[in-house]
Amino acid sequence: MFDLLNLPGVVPVDMHKESKGFIIVAETAEVEVPCCPKCNITMHKHGTRTNRFSDTPMQMEPVRLDIKRPRFRCESCGHLEMPELSFLDTKRRATHRLVDAIREKCLGTTFRDLARQTGVSANTVKSIAKDLIAEMEETVHYETPVIMGIDEVMLAGDYRCVITNLATNNIFEILEHRTQDHLKPFFKDLADREKVEWVCTDMWRPFKRSFAEYLPNAKLVIDKYHVIQMATKALEEERKKYQSELTRQQRIHVKKSIRWITLKRPHNLSEQEQKALQALRENIPQLAAAYDFKEMFCEIFDEPDKQMAQNAFEAWENSLPDKGLDDFKKLAKTVHNHYEDIFAYWDSPFPITNAYTEAMNGLIKMSNRLGRGYSYEMIRAKTLYSKTARKVSRGLRSGKGQVEYGPYIPSLIEQEDNDNVD
Ligand SMILES: [Zn+2]
Image 1 (spheres, rainbow, N blue to C red):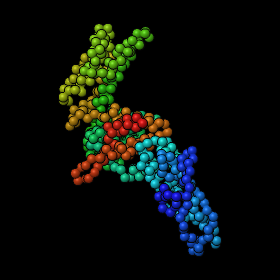
Image 2 (tube, rainbow, N blue to C red):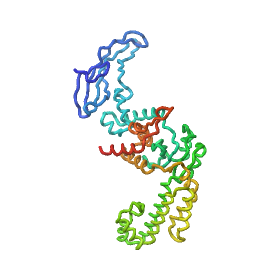
Image 3 (cartoon, helix red, strand yellow):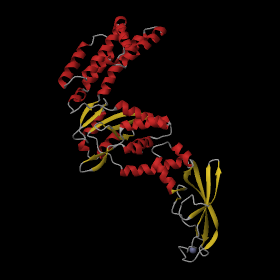
Image 4 (cartoon, rainbow, N blue to C red):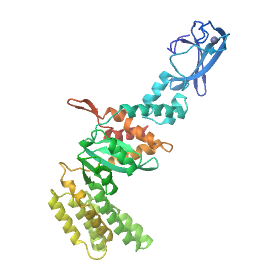
């Protein structure tokens, strides 16, 4: 029979197809009769044994090898032995080349798919992936971000802490939770932590305490996105308040006709929406006023310098009416509570803002696609260490050779979109 196996020490003698793929029967080539390692006397042949191992797929079908080996016995001590085969991973009951193929693919596809393609159990794929991840932990090191983004995102059933490199647009790390208990050790063990110059995050107060101690050169800037989001929410609250006073019929109509106002900036309004805004000014002036307050607030971030931005905020706050618009007043209070860190936006060498929406949506999409049953650890590893993600994340830096910054966010998203097609 033609040696379709190409494995040292065995020859295929039979092959047939079963519902779950191919079975190839192989026998060991002639072997020397061994000596007993304890008694140092020649052993005797003691029947044969057949063991089943998984091998790399053929014609897109899983392959199982039935390997028939002679067994030897020591007449003196009863020790039993079979010829060892170097291509076998006995722990996994698979060939090394199959284990290698699974390692190559396990971070880029689901364990279930890979188990189906290769005929091994999903748990075996998972265990191979775990070993690979442990190796990656030791060997893969991403360059510490000079400008670091820190955000929360819902992944694998809970809020996780995503650390990004905002200068290069890469994901640097994913922590299990955003708590002092997770952040402190992360900052403490961070290589080159004195290199971090800026940290961009939301208005989560305990954060300042956790990094101040460990990042001696870092300044905090509150992400503009999160501040603006508060203004959007304030407008949303006004719309809800207004709608609650309407009949159901009116409510549906209003919701349809003014849903856009919370989402769009004036320069993005279509002609039709501009007309609707005009109608809003005439018919529901209190809601139009809320829209204008939200817009005025967003424009603060278009100011060219810090002083002008602070003046614009003051003017905005002073123009708020005595009555109503409570959520906008809450927003003003929040700005005062985080004043330094919000206006630090104008101190940085270039506008720092999180790649928030883009990156987080990419991660959420991936997590959803993988489905339930994927732990935080696996999602983290798939994000940080998958081949495609790392392939595009390399850069050259003088003196240090090749450095990696972590998976490049636009490529992660592209990869997700491609994976979703098939
Ligand atoms: Zn013996």
